[in-house]
Image (tube, rainbow, N blue to C red; front, top):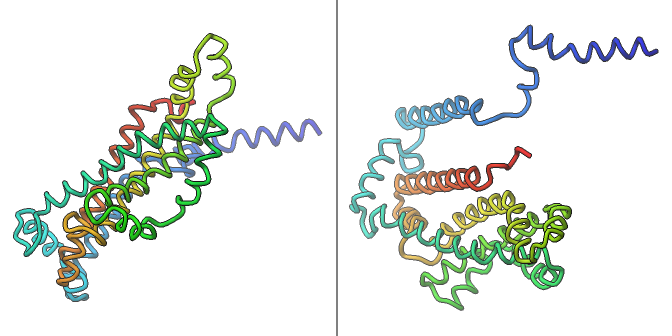
Length: 289
């Protein structure tokens, strides 16, 4: 019996080595992925989609009203950049206005949601007071309470920033609370036994231990803020990327609509890349412990 087990273990242990000798790679590499291994695939996919788009418009398979050519999109971008579209601020002004709205609301959410999340993660009373409020409004789509925000605050900048702020606030509070609760009790007890005050434990132990979840919550919340920004600008605004796309659709300017969608998507991707860099900068130990 013991001889059979030994032979089975030998076979199991030698299987990866046989596969590696035969194919020249670790069999575990077939599972999972990383950025370096998927970069080429992603580049080929983008090139294929752009090529299919160009071929479709070049041979006239779809009318330009529904799918303009890449050249038309570039021309729309050029005209929007130098403010030659009728009744429109230039593209740079619309972009800066949208970025100011979303980052202003996001920073306001950061300075309020993180302290509240830490309080809810470490205090039973704070969690009992604020948890039902946040859990009630968190699943609500921002457009559901947009009319109420407009009634209360009008259609000025305050209403847009408050709407984006509410969209950013809840996910960041929940992520911070979850991070605070993952801090090992042994670390807190060790800090207390060494004479640390409650404030020092909160700052140097709980906040530091919660940083991976806080950064993840920031990435999620700014994504919510960006999508809410575009929706808010489409409903109650005269400027911004969302309003630019809406006005263009009223004039059947499909080229401007697609150009605006591409810029919105690229800006969202750029913001997410910044958050990833921030994650590597402020939480270098994430995934290594």
